[in-house]
Length: 368
Image 1 (spheres, helix red, strand yellow):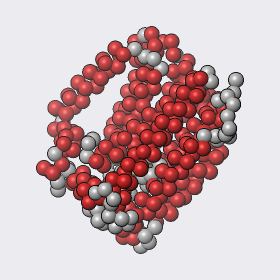
Image 2 (image 1 turned 180 degrees about the horizontal axis):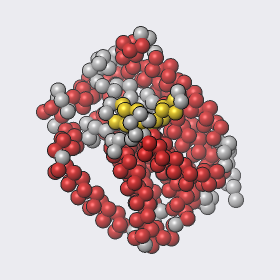
Image 3 (image 1 turned 60 degrees about the horizontal axis):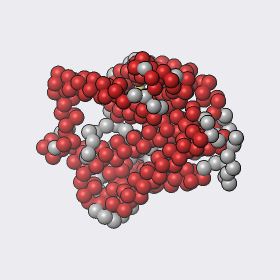
Image 4 (image 1 turned 90 degrees about the vertical axis):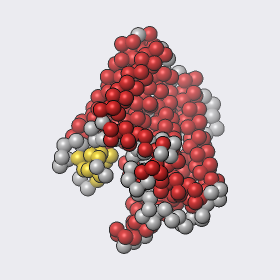
């Protein structure tokens, strides 16, 4: 029976997302002004593009808001197949576009799509349905745990071939979190962690450059002009920001010292300009976002909509983990990975799928 409610949609969730989008647009404008002026002879090229991405994402979100949840449950296998297909063809020279040494983009007409963003979205949708259909098997047998792990392994291999280590980590942790919340036994998780740990150790031993990439963040100043350059510049931004920041628009690090200032390292520019106060506000908004999504998931469980609940839990894990990893990388507590800050960093594909996820969450709230 539908619950009695005051609002048709979760306006708290909307308020949090719009706050993150607004802060993101402000910081993209500030962080990209100099590089935009050098490359395009206008200070707001990246801002205008980001505004266009946000506008398209909001319009698409409004359309998706009217789509029943059953539609996503029906198309989830096909959506996953499309993701696997794109993850495969992006590796083909001439089809995939190389950016910063990684083949992550597929050109579709005049548009480009970062395939890993579609993969994150589609795996959450697919796993939500799978965990409902195979719930008893996942909870009671090792085979039930192994089946999604095989799928996850295929996706991880394709992503690592790009390479995209950050997206691989987010997808793996998201799927494992969803399986754990579905009630899988603890022993398979322990065995998997031991297996992955052994594999990573073997990779590090056989390839010293991988070990260097994984450990540079521990001592970035030792290699401050080579492998540790990006992180040391980010840490300088944090140090200059202090408690109250140097003021909006007054960052020094964005003046070609900090690479990817308007994308992966946007949070470092925010830390420099808005200080600890700004950092805590953004972290608080992400904490509120994850909490609100988990609340929607709990409401779905109470309403007997298990698939919708797993979708909500999956989206909360995806967005929460990606935000945590991005902030951790910027602050130097995690190895450097190419992950955007959800709703804030410059990037059309990321904004698009983040907003689609929010639209589905609003639909879940509407239906329960």
